[in-house]
Amino acid sequence: MGEYVQGNLAKGEEVVYEARLHWIIFISIKAILTLLIAPLIAWYTSEFAITNKRIIIKVGLISRRTLEMNLAKIESVNVDQSILGRILGYGTITVIGTGGTREPFFQISNPLDFRKAFQQLQS
Image (cartoon, one colour):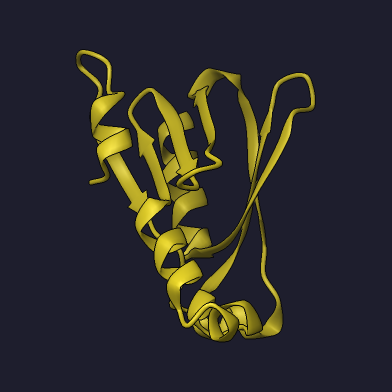
């Protein structure tokens, strides 16, 4: 479990599901131009977790983007996958909160499992 998620758990809160970025991030022009440094930083500084109370997502090292949303305030978690994404098991998850807030996160490993874990907690 990542440091950010572990450090921000409330009393009685437990991690139910964790996801990572998919290895496909290492196959890009950005990866080649930065000698794999950029995707390595992204890999180690990205955390995606579902707890029994909320979704916690953190991406970035210097410029950090976080999302912490209570499960009751989330309307849905959408999954978008290309053909290659379906074959290799990666995709984009979009967390939609009440009020229409849309937060997309790209190249997540096993996005359908992430959505399934969320749906199981909501029911």
